[in-house]
Image 1 (cartoon, one colour):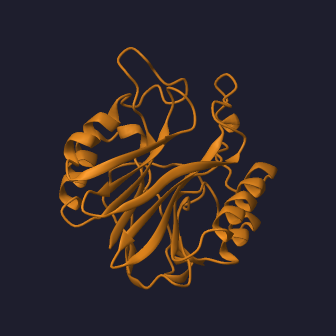
Image 2: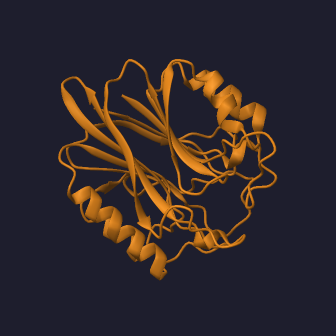
Length: 245
């Protein structure tokens, strides 16, 4: 199976993003997105005012062979979501909050968002896989440890420790590689960004000091056939690709 995780930046680089999804939808089985927006007409995000407020509707149109699974963490704000090819049996989907709670946003302070971990249990070749999608705790231009990120990682680890079988954790973690928050997750999962010597997951549209944010971690049962950071410029993040069995 093939998977891409991508923070779409609210669809700010619209045409290249849509073309990218059209092209890769021919071979990808699972898309994991962060910074989706799915607002009805007249509703605008307090945080992502310059984004395309209904970008998810456009993505749905260009991915007709996929089922959509959304996991909002704040009404009328950015959300996370998965698109899974319709031919893949999905046993169960859901989400758990790993920091704060749903609708926790205070004013316009994005550091107060509740953080949820989205998951989907799928069947392929008589095996169960659990795919997890995360958009981690954000602070401005700082991706080191803090109490929120440490709590988030501990709760993710607690959830994953109770999941049997092969599992994949992916998304925009908003973390530098050498943090204690990452080490908590790496205790039982392989960090492919480190294993493959990746030196950046950010495009030239990102001007902050850290070149890392996006990761794919896999449990030991996952056989990695290919892993790479794609160089398509469709966001301030680069798409991360995994082929596995």
